[in-house]
Image (cartoon, rainbow, N blue to C red; front, side, top):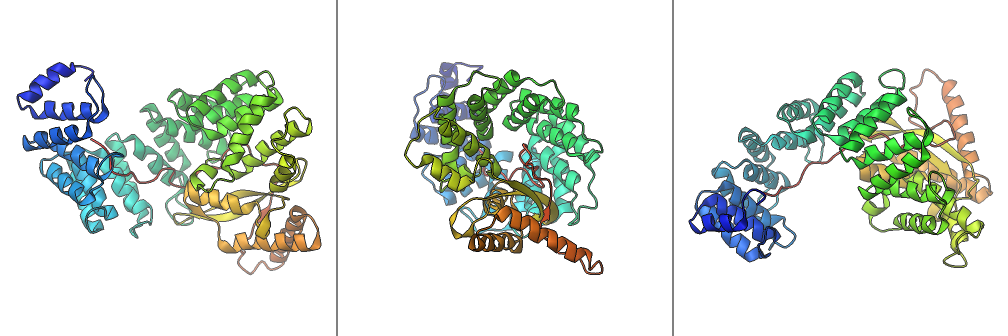
Amino acid sequence: LKLRPLSAIRADAEKGDAFALYLLALAHWDGVGGAAKDIELSAALLRRSVARGSGRAAGALGFYLCCDAVGPKNEKEAVEWFRVGSWLKFAGATRNLGISYRDGAGVKKDLKEAVRLLELSASQGSTRAWSDIGWLYNNNEHGLRDKVKARGYFQKAVDGGDLSAFMPLATGYWYGITPDGSDKDPRKALEILVRGGTAGCGECWYNAGLLFGSGDLGAVDEALAYNAFMKGAELGDPSAMLEAARKLGGGKGVAKNPAAAFALYERAATAGSVEAKGSVGLMLARGEGVTRDPARAAAILREILARDVSADPKLRHAIYQPNYWGYARDLGLLLEQQLVPQRSATELVELRKRYGARDGSMKRFTVPIDCAGIKSPFHVYVVNWDRPNDETAVDPQAEWLQQERGCTVPADVIDSFRKLKKIARENNVSFVDLTVYALGAAQQEQAAKPQQPAKQAPQPAAPKPQQNKPLAPVDPTKAKQPVGA
């Protein structure tokens, strides 16, 4: 439609040209190029295109029936159209047929057939199909976990130019694919991330920045981390923008520039980063890099904090839990200083009850986590707050980890924090102080028994929380759903 006027496409369609019928169908599907939006007409045109041999049209028709927001939702019929498209050798239709078998959507679930079809799709030209198979073996959602096979398929996808495969391939080298991570190769991971970033993967540059700043390559290099984040930002990656802004705001790896940091936070927020929007609110509240604006700051901080009480985990966990505490602290200061009015007589009281005192103590502990079979350490933070059912600050962090990273904190570890919270409440003592004391005592007890294997218990660490979102230990993306035409 960008190269030819709709009238020319319509004229060819009237002559029975299969591709023109397909293009005309898409124009009416989306209502673009001067065509009226008409889903039923679009479906009819797709059927005519299929009748003239267009596998692409068959794939689009299948997608319309299975997955389009305004489609009739007939997965069984969608499968048949995907089958027709596959028979006509259209890779996209074959891929979606394989995904249908993988998920049991419109057809009986058959993983062996799913793999066969996805491999066929790859041979027909879909490099994304190699990634789909990689995810089948990488995760254990379907009981096929085989990290070695997954790596092989991700490598094929990368070699074929599929940008989505660079991240899982690099992650496997960064953290290793053996349960103990003994085979990890961060330098190989960096090589893959740079290659992906150069090919246009903004998320790759973001993770390259995290790798430079992790110390896994040896000495931490803040300057290289900042440069990588900026490259990701230039490609439009919101997380890269967020981290580059943090570097500018803190003067790490680059000269401190709060004004530039604020501008980049705003860009990241516009691109969809909720955490960046929170940072905009914090800077407006403090007057850092921008003229102080308590009213606008309070509006943003309240909007972000509302997510933390949402019943939708996707909304709630778009923010890493400890960041909510910072938003609550600054909103509380604005309310205490009467720079903005309270929405209710109890707003400040409820805020402190939910998130703890603004000058309260915070401690960091390291706990073991499991990410798709890979064991690794993870930092959690605890504060004193007054929530019901002995919920500790570790609970929402564990939920975030599960929701956003697919990783789990052992149930006994979470339970140990809850028990300490209950003891602290019953004895009217600081939960944070009790936790430090109890876990310190546990460490000493273990040190006195070196012959026994160390238990996986939280270990006290530095009290200051990190600003960065925690590093993704494994697969930063999930398997893709059926795709459109």
